[in-house]
Length: 258
Image (tube, rainbow, N blue to C red):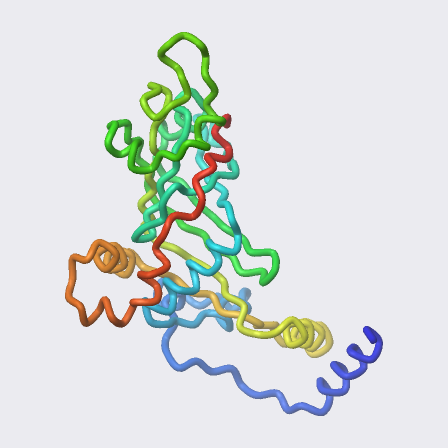
C-alpha cells in the first residue's frame, strides 16, 4: 500500500504543472520583516487572515495540545522551559497557578520576558506566544483560578500555614500578556503534505503544506476587549465562535517544581 502511494505521488509530481504561489492578502509576517532570499519557506508560507480566524486557529491548537511550555530566562542567560497548563486563557492572556518557592520565580524576578508555546503532534500545528509575565498574589485572583486538584502540586507541610490550599503563602498566579503570537497551521492533508515534501526533494521547490501567521499587539488587544465585552456587538458577532472558545484549558499546575 505504501509503495503504491509513493508511485502515485511520483506520477502526480511529473504530470502536474508547477503553479505559482499566490495569496489573497499581504501577510503579517511579511509586513514585519524584510524578505530573506535564503529562507524561501517563510516567505512562501506567510499568509494573513482575519483576527477571528486566527483566534480560532490558535485556540484549536491550544485545545489539542493539552499543555504548554513556559520558557523563562535565568540570571546566567540560560533558557528554562517546563510543562504547564494555563488555569485561564481568556482574551489570550495566559494565567498559571504556581509555587513561589520554585525556580521560575527567580527567573521572572530578573527578567519578566517569557515565551509560552504549544504543539499539536497530530497536525504538526504549533503556537508561540512572546510576552511579559507578572506575578499576582492577591487572594481574589488566586481564588478565581483555584481548583481543588491544584493542592496535590503544593502539598501540606503540616505547619498550619503551608497547607497547599489557595490561602497558602506559596501560591501565586503567573499572568502572561503576549505582545505577539506566531503560529503555524497545516492547510493540507497528510498525503498532500507528503507530496509537497517529495516534490521539493526532487525539484528543489520549497514545500509549503501550511501557513505561518502572526497575531499583532493591536489584534491581541482587540481580542481581550471582545472577550471582556468592552466593544460593540457588531465585532462580537464576527468573532463569536472564537469568543465562545475562551474557556479554561485545564489547570493542573504542571511544572510547579521548576
